[in-house]
Length: 454
Image 1 (cartoon, rainbow, N blue to C red):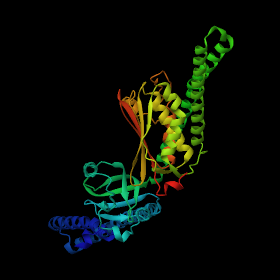
Image 2: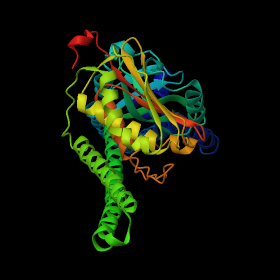
Image 3: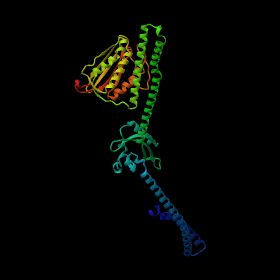
Image 4: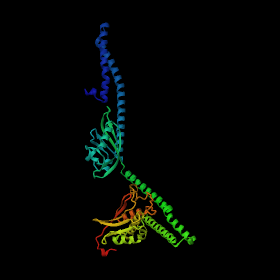
């Protein structure tokens, strides 16, 4: 039976000849009956002639059919060889591809992986064949993501996603994956083909670009803030100095000695304001260019605070503000001496500026396990919630008038933050509008004896 039902060239020839032979035999029998009845011709001779005729016809037909069959068989063989060649080229392309390519069955069991799969994930082919791709899950995506993923696949849709997978060693790789259902002749799904591209380096580059963009924005904001301070805040005290100096030079005799003293005091106050602003600008510019390096030493905090209070006592005295040093004489911090002085100078001066007459400013220190927290608290104007969140941001400009009309740029607080962080500490502000503010910063502590402290 297989000689007739097979797909070989002989089987096709036999299937082609069989109808002809059957038809010839039928015709032979029919003619034999007719001629025997009506002509009296010898039936044996007739049968021989008819048989010979049928054999000749059959041979001619068989030769023609054989030629066609063998020609077609040759064409099919050529097509097969071309298909095999293309398949080998396709397989070679997959094997040499830099993309991760793997195939699974309908249940998601891995049937094939290319060398890039092994290189990217660290698994050998033998380790993953028959396994489910869930062995690559990093745990960064929830189950709803994968449910939606499978829903689209089962609808015979191409799915393209960015995911995070895990290698055999446990490191996470960023992957751009494209998964396509493989369909059979009846349009049924019998597997899935996944093509993946490792975009880990691209993601890192994107993050670096974002970081550079943020730094560039900060740099531009810093430049704008600096120009704004130079153009407005630094001009104001110099205008005051120049104005009162001109009055004293040109109209000195028109004013009393008390008025002269008042003008001179205005010039002095404006000079101190300009000096502090210039000093802050210089220090701040040096921090931006890496020109300042902390040289920490052991410091007696009580003495440093007392020194800064003495410097600012004249300004505080003009508003009858009481500055109280509650730091214990044995409190020691490990930090850069000049930076700590500038931090305290700015924070105490800031408190004086926004504290009304007869107000109180207290400076205290709290001892923790590894650090000292210094607090400068006042009972002044306080700070609104919105401004409180932006106090230490260079790109946020605010100029709030003090209780005696003093102006500030906010640059001093930026410098305080820079210097505190350079010394390994943190700074924060607490405030209630109308009740006062409390600025706290931390510095590392040391265990040396007080008498050995600078």
